[in-house]
Length: 601
Image 1 (cartoon, rainbow, N blue to C red):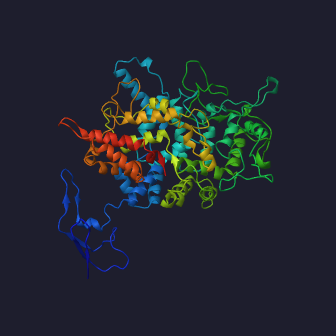
Image 2 (spheres, helix red, strand yellow):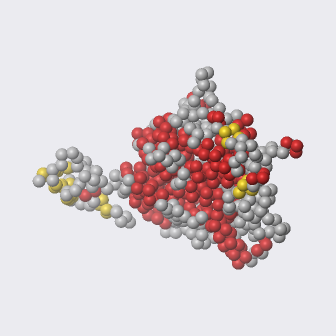
Image 3 (spheres, rainbow, N blue to C red):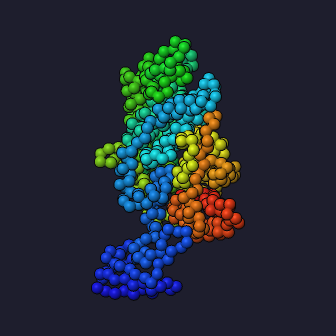
């Protein structure tokens, strides 16, 4: 046995006895060690005790906890501290594997169920059922929030939203009245989030909501005498936005250059015309029940079409003849329309650009705006071939989230690291990471005020180009540093101030709410500060707790001190003043508007 005596400045002497160790003592390396001290501190109104054994058992060393908080900030919409602690106890890959097996109810069905429930509430409150219409886009919003509060499929939902910002459709368009269709399209993304990219590409191509949004629904073959030609909208976007982009890429995402040092276009207008011929002849398989005698046929308007069933091919309306695709590939004449589409999807899926193109966009969505070429290359390689399979989304997701550039602390201070967290992700974080005072029993939320303030809501993009462009460069400083900052495109003088006002609104739960419905007279759902008020007895303790939840342990000393200095003077002047509530409100507001939070590094 070997006796160690440690004396600490301003502390009582602490003695412990153990077997001899030759590497180190402390930080959890304490098996078989007994620690005694002359006293252990207890503070009034606190359940915690400053125990002697905590000097060496690693208690209070939060590195793994904070690393996990950062990991979950990339992989989820936010979790509470208990969940972070649980995930921190095992390898992250184990959590990912578990998440791969978790799903949630279909969104399309949930939209319909919520509409019926909302109609019942409206009528019970004295409303005329003829005055309550739907299912419309608000019912999709209700369903989205219902699916993302208290759910277990955290990774699947996060990946689905990321995919929705690549394969864009929007209710802020002619689709606003088709809530079930919006939900069913979201299911396509959700169901294929952990599947194969080719299947995902095929299913979004055939979905009537995409068909109506990018106008290849009821897209007819050529009729030169009537000056009718296939619509080119989807043909352009499936290349530009969904698979290969505008220019030829290397595996690391860099541009291939010709002998003059110029970028090489992936396609031209003639290619778009050829691809447009492929996506002709698609229409509805079935129609909604109607009083007009309308039956399924090519040309039936989207209003009457079933919005939760894939489009079908009407070959008599499909462009005949061969079609010339990219790089000399020819789709032969004499095939059926669906054979043409299948061949074209396979063609784009196998294009060398697709791996790096999708790798970059998913990395930007989840981890950082400016991944290194090596990071993109590693993920592209996984996309291209994982045990003989191309487009394995599970493997791609693992490669993105477990890459050393995503996980290593050495990258945090690198100037290329980080991304601005989208406003709607900040909204989801606050709603998920703080308790909700749910009075009405549902987690429905229309989010329309937030949408007006920031321009963001799930499936609410203003155009097929998403809320912001992945190549967006805010100013000359970014340009000089060769950096992109996509989310800054919607970070304007108006939206930034509006976000501050939204946070002020959220953090006044006595007067405002996080979740609310429209035209239903349901009680709103504010935040609940009761658990946080316990920590508010000490400003620094409260800020440290919020740091673990929202700023991943990356709250700077300067910002932390500013918040502590703002919180500590708040005190009650009589027994009726709940100053702990005001402390939580102040600290939470300042955390949520701090650059330490809104920049994920």
